[in-house]
Amino acid sequence: MIRLREVTLADAPALYRWRMDPETRRQFHDTREVPYEAHLAFVRRYFDPANTDHWLIVEAAGEPVGAIALYDRSPDGEEAEWGRFVIAPEHRGKGWGRRSLELLIDHARETGVRRLRCEVLAGNTAAEELYRRLGFTETGSYQDGGRTFRRLSLTLTKVED
Image: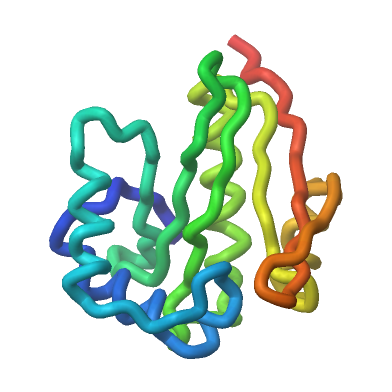
């Protein structure tokens, strides 16, 4: 049983552990290890009333196993980026990443998003294959710090009433 729930401040330690895992860090733009206080400040900004991000914890059988977020929505709300996607190292390979992304896609569709964007580090084969299986197509790529990142998007159909 996989479900998504909104992040809480109590999730900060787990989020930090997952994000600072060396294998996880190398998949992100910023690969540096950050001090916990900087991480905590980032998490706290999520709770600012002006924030429009939607940051979610992935739970399997009631246990937090990862995180995923929907952010950078267009002014009309029809386009958004998703990311901050991580499954705890000890929980990888169980299909929870795929299921949580499917749930995020459903959530985005239900909240009026018609186009989802994401980026993936070229060579992150497991992620690239998962995103393509779910219908994402490449829209371009760019270099950052000597590494190539692919841009992908997915067009969502409206929810039928």
